[in-house]
Length: 407
Length: 96
Image (tube, rainbow over all chains, first blue to last red; front, side, top):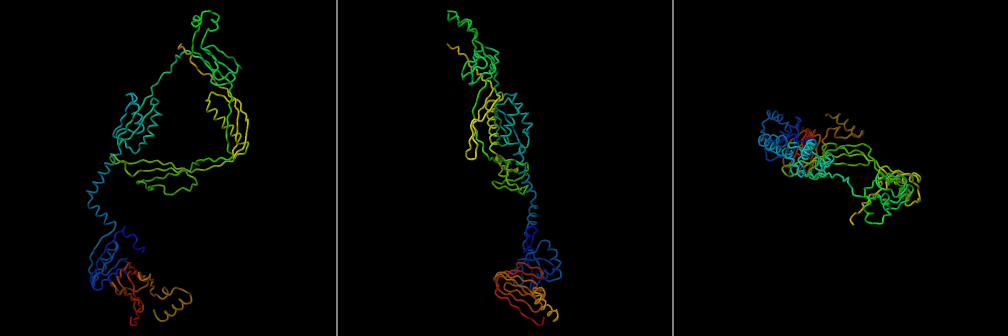
């Protein structure tokens, strides 16, 4: 049946042959290399059959030498459909053009409205948006999602505390909140400095205030380190209490107290670790999404990666207010490799110490200096090494404590 | 095809196990139940109607009769017949 497989696309006609023994005319045709199918005898002298569109001229030629009468009954196939289509060209093109027009207009940014910020910032936001390609008249399709715009705006305009981007049809609404830049109160009230943590003091830098401790002193948490009350000792032996109060001068103590503190941390280190690594091999696939169906338009082959990580990006078309059910999806398939690493006992311990150190550093901040570490205890459990590690840290333990003057 | 050729052809078909329809130019008919008949190597169509199909052979003709015949496909030397096939008959006609 190969011969009649693509007839719909090339077009075919049904012909009626009239005359004595009309089937013989078909026989004659086949001898001339014409393929005929679905031959039916509809009457004593009438026969009907299908021929391909391109064979029509041949049929006419063959008929010329015979007495048969041929009439065309039906025309079928794509060529006729498209022909019909082009007859009504004006109407059809009009519809298509108007659809395209509406479609195009629906995908253009018509307005950007910014609310809640000062005109100055508004201007800056507008400029920034223009850089991202969002301005009245821009094609929306190339614009990123509101979430992305939001993030970009926040990082590019530091004065913004928060910005909300919503996309309503062809208009972008931006709601901004400015950071009210509060100047840090330099003029602090009188205060003491106390110990935030227990430790042994190894260094002190007191710029204001009266130090109450010495280097190598052991302090507990909450101990007074630097007093903001000056002159206390001088007026100590005066008999009048009121005078004593007056003699005290309350100032804002400022100091940096470096103390050696200690920490114990517990870490579990598995002997076998699995982690994912992207190999850098990737492949992009493009789809058109119709409702929930993904039609691939580019990148048909599945890459032969064993493990993959897929990132998908979707941008949709709009039609009037509603979203088109068709959207464009770009997938990035990245090759992933799962690396499983086995560690020896000693490696695991080293890794554990490293990890604990990092954690501690993160907790304490950059200024802390880890000077010493020691594994206090180690044990194996379920393929994991459990470590208890002791750390010595040099860090600033100064903590401000206002002196209450309420009474 | 004269007698000698026929004999040689027969011999070839028998001893070399070649398909006899190719060697002897005989029609090959494949039927699927009563539904289809696929005829290759015929020498031309003689008659076709709702109930009968007659095909020329080298010696005589082939007659297939039945009901609701439709020629599903017609190619030079090949015909696919569809309908309800009742009878397939070889009619030898010495005069041809």
